[in-house]
Each structure stands twice: as C-alpha cells, then as structure tokens.
Image (cartoon, rainbow, N blue to C red):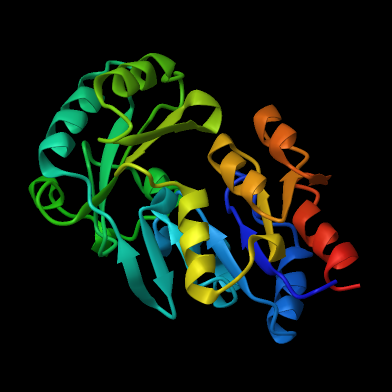
Length: 267
C-alpha cells in the first residue's frame, strides 16, 4: 500500500472511554513511527489532555488537531487556532451553566489553560486529563483566547440544550457538536470541526485526501471519515459513523485499530 497519513480519534477509537488502550496498539504505532509513516490525532481533547490519555503513545502522536478542530499543533507548538467571539462566549456560557441538567461547563484557551464552572474532583480531573497547573479562573478564560466551550452531564442527555444552542446561534456564529451519546456538547468558532482541521493540515503538507486513512467512532468523526480516502469505523462506533465509513474494524476494546493497521498498512 502507498504510504498514507493515519489520522486517529482518541476516545472510543484508540482507547475505550473507561479503560486503557489495547496492548497491541503501542507496538503497532511504534512500528509505524519507525517506518516513517506519518500519524496525527484529531480529537475534541486539549493537546495536554490527549497526551495524558495516550500515555507513551504520545511520543508518536504529538501532532494534530485538538479542541474539536479549534487548534492545530505541530512539533510541540501551536500553529493555528481560532477564538470564539467574546460577546457570544459570555452569552453561550450563561445559557450552558443555566441549563439544570448540565453537570459542568468549561472554557478552554489556546494556551492549554482551562476554567470550569465548578471545582472538579480528583477523579474528574483525571477523567478529563486536566493538570492542576492548567486550571485558571473563569474571568481569565472569558477574556484570553477562548477557543472551545464544553458542557456535559453523566446522568442526563443534553439534546434539549443542544437544540436551544443551535436555534439561538447561526452556523456563521458558532459550531456545536453533540457527542458521547448526547451527554456532551462542544462549541467552537464557526466552520471548525475535526474534518476542517485535518483538511487544512493536509493542504499545508500537500497530502492528497485519497492518501488519508482516518479512524473514528463518534458523530464528530463522521465528516472526517467521509472526506478521507479511507474512513474506518471501529465496531463500537455510532451508527452514523459506520454508515459514513468505507471500512470497519474490531472495537477499540479488542484493539481494532491496531489489527487493521497490521493487516492493511504493515503487512
């Protein structure tokens, strides 16, 4: 197979939401790295959060699109990001925090700092991959390069809030994405998502879309899988993602991405 750019979602694709990555994944990606096969991530997580979740694999996956497309990192430095308009940010934040079923709301900034609407427990900090040194006051986040809003609830689905937000703001004002089975909402500046971020990355690197292999599981990965030359959905993916994919592999729990790469890239 011709050398391709491999693009990975993290949660639900490389690693289960509540477990460690399959043991076959690290040696597989290490072999790809040693052979010079280019790899990036496309994730809703902040870069530092993504690296905490990836563990040793972060050595091979330091580059990519983070904050659901709101920023791009290369060689340890942020190379592009887009802020949310401040007047919209304040109004959106108020709507999200006022919603009774929302458990917590956060504002992430381009420099990796993040503010929360309430104090997080140690378990939550670990779950979301937040180092204490990155937590800042809400007032700072509201006025310093805010690039992503997020609200979530472990117990309740947030479809009603999503409908409210998408009705209140046009696509030219905000981009919203409902993920994790309806339990989480991300908001970024208009036109931003994983697909757009990966497209820009490939344009900068002069990579043809037909030479992109993208792996995903949630609805935020749908357009990216449709755009890529080969879109691969893991078995645990949302039905919409499976419908948008060209191929499917085993679930992330069973090391599906590693097995697919071993069969189709490294063989």
